[in-house]
Length: 343
Image 1 (tube, rainbow, N blue to C red):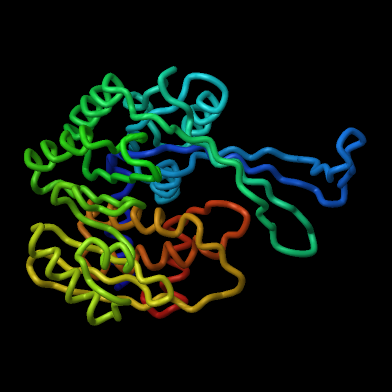
Image 2 (image 1 turned 135 degrees about the vertical axis):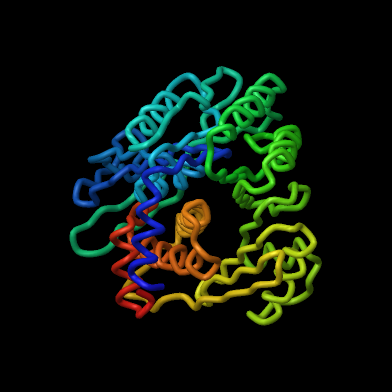
């Protein structure tokens, strides 16, 4: 990508309005000082002393964090949180993110706040070590009243949005934001706005989704299309191209250490290898950084190859940030692209 194209695309970001529909989590990092370890008098078990608590938006909130790091002008989270404890903490964390407007975000006593509690051993002598995570989730179906409000907020947000990103983060279907009823509402929005970039990613796979822009990994591509065995790059490209043609929308596939590939409904295909590692890595959040950058680049009028380059650069930045679910700024992405001969 030439530097003038990089500047042209990223300079549009401050004017963009991007909505994020999905499961917003509270990532609560508990920083533990191992030097302050104790033994409980009552139980005889080890005591971990927390010296700092670091809350930040997770799940779909990680996409929001990445959009903000890119300088996106207006970001509309569309999701829910509980109205006590962690819900207030998540709301405050989202409020602090530059560009965020919370008029489409719901607080309700009918849902728990999806929370990842992440204890971290912090030592000056080595990278942070994450201990067993403590999760809080919803195990019952999302109430109809909440679903209807989510669909209404999506319909309202799309009137001014330049792109929409959808993230389904929950393990148990129908318990999060992206339920079958919300997908039906997304289908209506898609049909009424055929040129609007709407990118979707789901940890349970995209089967049953309306024909939006699909973003997935190679295993999810295989499962969705019924492919057998592990797909090599050429096979994944062919399968993704057929899926893009069928849906009439582009398909993006992350390939871990093999980079990212894409196929459009018009038959264009592109693949970019992953950039070399620069030290220890933590892949948490890399996929969300890719989603944020793909949607922003498409809304910023990037070509398919340019969108892949920007997303690949963002992933390279994020995986090298340890002990946090990281983000990638325009400056950081530019530095990685330049260092790898892509700018």
